[in-house]
Each structure stands twice: as structure tokens, then as C-alpha cells.
Image (cartoon, rainbow, N blue to C red; front, top):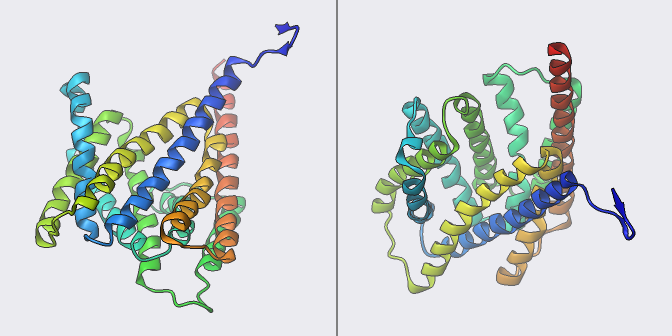
Length: 307
């Protein structure tokens, strides 16, 4: 139905726009989290930052769990929750440490390799078949990583390697999800991840304890709030629009984080960070779009077959 002023937007397009707006907002929150970690890294170790991140997050989430009902936290896979938390904890420790050392723009660009590691792990542990197109796109993505690192011109140290390790471990947590989503509720997945990581961080935090300063209080609160809301908002965006539409918003983390880093720390990413980050992004975007189309085709074929 059209009006005198023209056609009105369809409900579908409005929903997609809402999803994109939420996804973009989540990128600002993710970038704010990176920036807060950089602030805290000057005064405390990465295990303690993880501890505060999870403690604030659990303080926020517990009233919600109590309101929704503790019965939603029932789980059939407590051991797998614990193993996933161990992998997630390792990735978070590496990532938080590296953010405190590596320029933020460069760190984010290297971390874009996460979806590429996910493909490799899916082949190894899920037996997924990868065609020539995805293989080439994945290879191009890792070439983009080499552009960012410039191993022939710059010294590539442990911090950069820890970012790659973090990306690989975060990809591993997604592989765990593939096994768990059929029996575990989103609330249970969120709760047990936060709970077990909090427990894992306590011994190292006690051993490496540094009392927070007054200046640390605001970043601690920010990292807990933004670190909790950002993934929730991004997941909500994926429910409103296809991954092929929402996925590209992830690249906004590079200019947003670089903007924060320039304004607050005077960091200016080199042109190779942008070029390499762009290559990594384009390869993962191509894979996302292609997989989204193939998934739609599979669903259409299944529907046609069942008709």
C-alpha cells in the first residue's frame, strides 16, 4: 500500500534497520571495553581485570536470573560448561594482556582472524567440509594478518602471538556452543560461562593482587557493564537480521577503537593496519555472505522436499 508521499517501509526492512542500529551500538560498547582494559592494564594484571569484569557482570546478571527463575539454569552438561569456560578464560587472559601492550587498532585488526580460526576448528572437530572458495577466502584472510604484522619489517613478539592465540581460543568456545545449544538455554550458557571464569580468575587474582585505585573504579564498572551488554546486543541484532547483514558491522570496531585510542592515548594506526584489517574483513565477510546464502538454499530445499 502506498501513500501520497510514497511507499511506506515494510515491517521486514524496519526490523533489519533496527538490527543494524543495535549491532552498530554494540560495536561502540565492544570498543569501549577494549579502551577500559587499556586503562586498567597500567595498574593491574590481566587476571585481575578478568576478575573484575566477571564480578561486575555477575552482579548485573544475578537479579535478572532471580527474576526469570533459577530453574532456567538447569544444565545437562556441567562438565562441558567448565571446559568451555577454561578455554574462554585462556583467550580472555591473552586478549586483555595484549591490549595493554599492542596498539589498540593493530590488536583489533589481528583479532579479526577469529572467524578464520573458527573455520579451521570446524573442519578438525566438527568434520565440516570446506570448498575451494572458502579455502581461498580463509587463506586471503591470513595473508591480511601478515600484512598487519609485517614480520619482515617489524618485530613480531609474544603480544601479537597472544592475540592470535586468543582468537583461536575464542573460536574454540564457539565450537563448544555447537555441541551445547541443543540442550542448554541462553541464560544457562551466559551464567555458567561467567560463573566458571570468575572462579578461575580468583586464585591468580589473589596471587597477583593489586588494590584498585580511585581512578580504576570507573573503568572497572564500565568494563563490566559494556562487556555484558555488548555481546547481548550483538546476539539480539542477529535475531533481527541475517548474519550477512550484521556481520560486516564488526569491522566498525577498527575505526571506533582507533578513534578512542587516538583521542585518549595518542595512538595512530599505520596504513598497513587498515590495509591488512580490510583484507581480513573482506575475507570473513565473503565467507559470512556465502554461508548465509547456502543456509537459505538448504532450508528452501528442505522445505521443498517436505512439501
